[in-house]
Length: 175
Image (tube, rainbow, N blue to C red; front, side):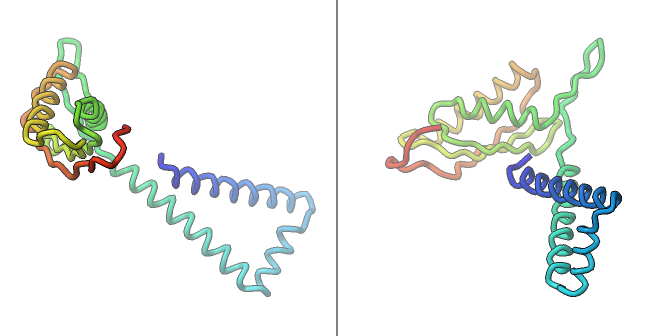
């Protein structure tokens, strides 16, 4: 979950807790919530801000839910005598990301998966300076193909590499 999602969720929790406490206090005779609601009728800005905040929070939560439903459900399926083994695409992407980052000369990588059967990987790489790009790209392709064959036991049909940047010599080489 992203940092912004956690912040928004925390705000929603606080708002719901405050509303719950105020509703409970009203049940036991405290009129603070009722007085504030009556005040909203006369001071329209309070009511408008409350409605706006609640609508924005609700909209954001709906967008979070829709985004969560969009997660890639595809998987690599291997059949064994004891049953199926399913390795989801996020797992494959994570393994590829770690393997690519371990290759000397690669600063950063973005991994996406095209087809699952046969497996097609798309890598976008940011490289360190002073490396021969064609040779490094071929090294990445071969390393990832061999790594997935060894670790996951699957054949890789394609490893497409796009270089989206090379660090300048002045930039720090920290990972």
